Length: 121
Image (cartoon, rainbow, N blue to C red):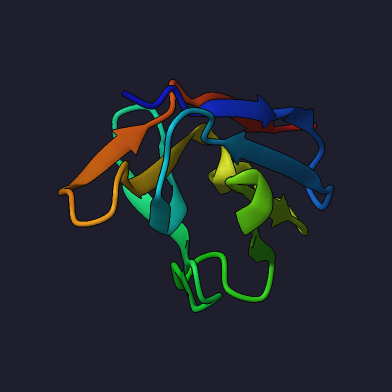
Protein backbone atom coordinates (compact mmCIF):
# COMPACT_ATOMS: atom_id res chain seq x y z
CA UNK A 1 0.00 0.00 0.00
CA UNK A 2 1.25 3.49 -0.86
CA UNK A 3 0.05 6.69 0.82
CA UNK A 4 0.71 9.47 -1.65
CA UNK A 5 1.65 12.63 0.24
CA UNK A 6 0.57 15.89 -1.39
CA UNK A 7 1.70 19.37 -0.43
CA UNK A 8 1.15 22.88 -1.67
CA UNK A 9 -2.12 24.25 -2.91
CA UNK A 10 -4.05 27.14 -1.45
CA UNK A 11 -5.53 30.44 -2.53
CA UNK A 12 -3.98 32.51 -5.30
CA UNK A 13 -5.11 35.49 -7.35
CA UNK A 14 -5.82 35.20 -11.07
CA UNK A 15 -2.58 35.38 -13.01
CA UNK A 16 -0.61 34.06 -10.07
CA UNK A 17 1.47 30.93 -9.65
CA UNK A 18 1.37 27.93 -7.39
CA UNK A 19 3.35 24.73 -7.05
CA UNK A 20 1.99 21.45 -5.76
CA UNK A 21 4.03 18.37 -4.98
CA UNK A 22 3.45 14.72 -4.28
CA UNK A 23 5.72 12.02 -2.91
CA UNK A 24 5.30 8.25 -2.86
CA UNK A 25 6.98 6.79 0.23
CA UNK A 26 7.25 3.10 0.95
CA UNK A 27 8.56 -0.03 -0.68
CA UNK A 28 8.50 0.66 -4.41
CA UNK A 29 10.39 -0.99 -7.25
CA UNK A 30 9.32 1.42 -9.97
CA UNK A 31 6.80 4.12 -10.79
CA UNK A 32 6.22 4.06 -14.55
CA UNK A 33 3.88 7.04 -14.45
CA UNK A 34 2.84 9.84 -12.13
CA UNK A 35 0.42 12.63 -12.71
CA UNK A 36 -2.14 15.14 -11.57
CA UNK A 37 -5.88 15.15 -12.03
CA UNK A 38 -8.42 17.68 -10.84
CA UNK A 39 -12.07 17.81 -9.95
CA UNK A 40 -14.08 21.00 -9.79
CA UNK A 41 -17.43 21.16 -7.97
CA UNK A 42 -20.15 19.49 -9.99
CA UNK A 43 -17.71 18.19 -12.58
CA UNK A 44 -15.98 14.91 -13.24
CA UNK A 45 -12.33 14.30 -12.44
CA UNK A 46 -10.13 15.20 -15.39
CA UNK A 47 -6.52 14.70 -16.36
CA UNK A 48 -4.24 17.71 -15.91
CA UNK A 49 -0.80 16.32 -16.69
CA UNK A 50 1.18 13.08 -16.55
CA UNK A 51 4.84 12.19 -16.73
CA UNK A 52 6.58 8.86 -17.24
CA UNK A 53 9.74 7.68 -15.54
CA UNK A 54 11.55 8.55 -18.77
CA UNK A 55 10.26 12.11 -18.71
CA UNK A 56 7.56 11.95 -21.39
CA UNK A 57 4.72 14.32 -20.58
CA UNK A 58 1.10 14.85 -21.53
CA UNK A 59 -1.07 17.86 -20.74
CA UNK A 60 -4.71 18.76 -20.95
CA UNK A 61 -5.26 21.34 -23.67
CA UNK A 62 -6.61 23.76 -21.10
CA UNK A 63 -3.28 23.94 -19.23
CA UNK A 64 -0.74 23.65 -22.04
CA UNK A 65 1.76 26.48 -21.92
CA UNK A 66 0.77 27.40 -18.36
CA UNK A 67 1.47 24.29 -16.29
CA UNK A 68 4.66 22.25 -16.12
CA UNK A 69 4.94 18.77 -14.62
CA UNK A 70 8.25 17.39 -13.42
CA UNK A 71 9.44 14.47 -11.32
CA UNK A 72 12.36 13.49 -9.17
CA UNK A 73 12.79 9.76 -9.58
CA UNK A 74 15.27 9.51 -6.71
CA UNK A 75 12.66 11.00 -4.34
CA UNK A 76 9.72 9.25 -5.99
CA UNK A 77 8.08 12.66 -6.29
CA UNK A 78 6.14 14.63 -8.85
CA UNK A 79 5.60 18.38 -9.01
CA UNK A 80 3.17 20.61 -10.85
CA UNK A 81 4.15 24.21 -11.44
CA UNK A 82 1.05 26.21 -12.27
CA UNK A 83 1.45 29.66 -13.82
CA UNK A 84 -1.00 32.21 -15.18
CA UNK A 85 -3.72 30.66 -13.07
CA UNK A 86 -7.34 31.30 -13.97
CA UNK A 87 -10.51 31.04 -11.88
CA UNK A 88 -11.49 28.00 -13.93
CA UNK A 89 -8.40 26.21 -12.59
CA UNK A 90 -10.09 26.12 -9.19
CA UNK A 91 -10.47 22.48 -8.17
CA UNK A 92 -9.23 19.76 -5.89
CA UNK A 93 -6.01 18.43 -7.41
CA UNK A 94 -5.26 14.73 -6.98
CA UNK A 95 -1.89 13.07 -7.33
CA UNK A 96 -1.81 9.73 -9.14
CA UNK A 97 0.92 7.12 -9.35
CA UNK A 98 1.17 3.79 -11.15
CA UNK A 99 3.40 1.68 -8.95
CA UNK A 100 5.15 -1.65 -9.14
CA UNK A 101 6.22 -2.79 -5.68
CA UNK A 102 8.56 -5.58 -6.80
CA UNK A 103 10.11 -6.64 -10.07
CA UNK A 104 7.74 -8.79 -12.08
CA UNK A 105 4.78 -7.99 -9.83
CA UNK A 106 1.55 -6.31 -10.97
CA UNK A 107 1.08 -2.58 -11.30
CA UNK A 108 -1.12 -0.75 -8.81
CA UNK A 109 -2.84 2.59 -9.25
CA UNK A 110 -2.79 4.95 -6.25
CA UNK A 111 -4.44 8.28 -5.54
CA UNK A 112 -3.65 11.05 -3.10
CA UNK A 113 -6.30 12.60 -0.88
CA UNK A 114 -6.34 15.80 -2.89
CA UNK A 115 -5.24 19.36 -2.32
CA UNK A 116 -7.46 22.37 -2.87
CA UNK A 117 -6.38 25.03 -5.36
CA UNK A 118 -8.54 28.16 -5.40
CA UNK A 119 -7.99 30.96 -7.91
CA UNK A 120 -9.89 34.05 -6.88
CA UNK A 121 -9.44 37.75 -6.34
